[in-house]
Image 1 (cartoon, helix red, strand yellow):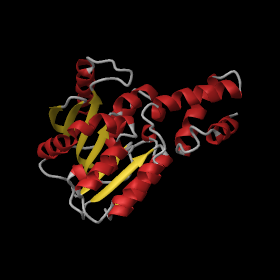
Image 2 (image 1 turned 135 degrees about the vertical axis):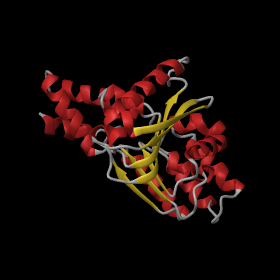
Image 3 (image 1 turned 180 degrees about the vertical axis):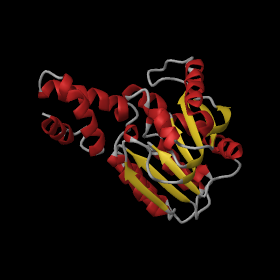
Length: 270
């Protein structure tokens, strides 16, 4: 049954670009609970929506064409405007646009400096915010996501602007990527991990090889529900408690659309 479910999911228009390892894992988890292949496929699609579907934007072909046509070799005003329009295509980055310059300036101030090796976990279209992120042109941008469609856009963009980079598909519930970095971004992803496996976020944070990890939570749900900060602050406190000596310090930053924690990582991962 599992193979049939996987084949059906990957043949669907909505989820054919999702990383195969994520679909394999969900199918293996849901098939034993299902009454039939149809029931298992519905269960997997429901969980895929929780894992990647909620933030998925419109296909970005038009944005990619505009970015290619606009790029002149510098982050001039037309290119920055084109990047802003591209970021509007993804729900998560759309929420951050109004404060994006302040966002990264304050995050790097908390870290101590902009990184030379940045790991963007469940990146979505966030790498298209590069003109606002403030990386050195020689810094390496590492980006992974479960959505191959998004990764194609990210790869094309980073190649276009000449930023050293590597991109790959990932299922973060399955474990941390083997990608050492100065800073890892885990933006608005913990709630999505929690819906799949309540222990996944702690495992991921424990096993990341990064000097700092930037964890954020949305101030509002996609449905518009506000007042989430207390619950998310408690969630972060719980994660820090579980991680123990792996976290040597934490700085909280508040933005209109996001609650951010900059974690200094240290200690043994064991």
